[in-house]
Image (cartoon, helix red, strand yellow):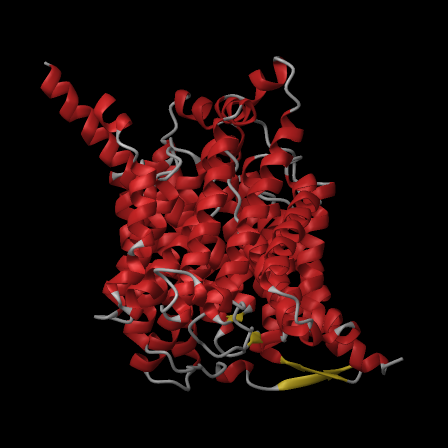
Length: 296
Length: 323
C-alpha cells in the first residue's frame, strides 16, 4: 500500500487534469447540446489557444502577471472569433445535411489548423511560465501543491457555477436551453436562432482557447496536442452525457481519476481503461451518466 | 446509358490493371498495389456507409486486426500467406461481429462514437501489447509471401517479386470485389438499401434491422481485415497507426471523395487520394492542409464525390442530346 500522502497527491493531480478537461469538454458539450454538431476541431481550437497565448506573452514580454492573464484572455477571445467566423461562413451551410458531412467538415478543420499551426509556430516544443503571483507551492497532508494547480482546481467549479447561473437565470440561458430542446419552435417564436448558434459556437470555442492558454504553464505546446485532447474530451462528454453540463463535470472528474490511478494500477493500460470505460458507458447508457436520451 | 451499360468497364479496368507490371516501372507497381489494397478497404466501408447508411468512425480497427493477424501468423509462427490471409478475414470478421453486436444497438452519433471507442481500444492494445504486436515499434520485417511458384509461369515468370505480389494482390482484391458486388446486388443488399432509406419502415415490414446491420458490419469488417492483411505485407510491417482514428477518417474521406452513392465510388476515391498525395507531397510537406481544403470544397461543392459529379454531368449531357 503506497503512502496516503502519495495517494492524496495523485488524487489532486487527477483533479487538476479533470478541471482542464472540464474546461475544454464543457465547450464541446455546449456546442453539441445546442447545435447538435460533434466538433472534432475543438481540440484544434485548444491548440491554437495555447500557441496564441505563447505568442502574446512573447509580444508583451514574459515574467509579469499582467502579460500572462492578458495572453490567456486575448488567446481565448481570438479563438472565439475564429470559431464565430467558421460557424457563420462555413458550418452554417451544413446544418440541413447528414451528420457525416458535419463531422467531416470539422475533421477538415483539424487537418487545416494543424498544418497552419506548424507553418506559423514550427514543430518545436514551446512553453509559457506560470504567472509570478501563482509561482510557489504549499504543503497539504504531505503533498506538494503548486498554487497554479490550486487555481485550476478552483477555476473548474467556478466556470461550472457561472455556466449554471447563465443557463438557468438569464434570458439567453433560457434561449439556449430552448434551442437544445426544439430549435424550430424557438425560431418560430421569433428568436434569432442563427445568431444564437454563432454565439454558442463562439462561447464553446472561447472555452477551448482558454483551456489551451491555461494549460501552457503545465504542459509544453507541441504539434499533435490537438488530436490528443479531442479524444480525451470525447471520452469525458460520453461518460457524462453529450450536452449535459453537470454530466461533463462528473465525466471530467471520473476520467481524471481513471488516468491518475490507472497509471498506478496498470501503468501501460491507463488509456486503454479510459476507452473501455467509454465503450461500456455507450453500451449501457448511451446518453451518459447525467445526460438525457436524444429525441429522434 | 445503354452504350455505357454495354461496355464492360469492370473487365477493362481489371485487364488494364493486369498490364501495369509490363510498364516496367517499380514506382507504378508500387502505386498500383497501394491503390488496389486501399480501394478494397474503402469499398468495404461503403457497405456500411453507402449501402446501409451507418457512419462508422472506427473502420480502421478491422484493417489493423487483419494486418496484425496475418503479420503475426507469418512472422511469429511461420505460417504460409494463404492461411494467414484467410485467418485475417475470419478474425477481423469475428471482432466486427462482436463489436458490431453492441454498435448496431445505437443510432447516429452514438453509433459513430462507439465504433470510435472500440477502434481506440484495438489501437491501445496494438500499441501496448509489446510481446505480441511489437508495441510502438510495430511488427517489423514481416516475411514476404512465398511466391516462388510464379517464376515458372509463362509471361510473368521473369518479373520482379514486387510485381508478383501485385498480381496476387490484384487477383485477391478482384475476387473480393466480385463477392462484394454479389452481396450488394443480392436481395440481402436490397434490404440494406431499404434500411438506409428508412429504418422505421424496414422494421415495419418485418425486417430485423439490427440483424441485417450486424451482418453488414461483420462483412465490412471481414473485407477491411483482408485489405489490412495485404497492406501489412505490402508495407513490410504492421504498425499501431493502422488502427488509429485518423486512419478511420482517411478511409471515410476516400469513400466520400469517390462518392458513396456508387459501388466503385470509394475505389475511385482511394485511387484519386493516393495519386494526389503522390503529386502533392513532391512539392510540399503540408499534405494535410491540402487534404483539408479538398475535403471542404468536396463537402460544399461536390457532395456526391467524383463519381457522383461525373454521373450528374453525364445525365445532363444526355438530357441535352435527347432534347
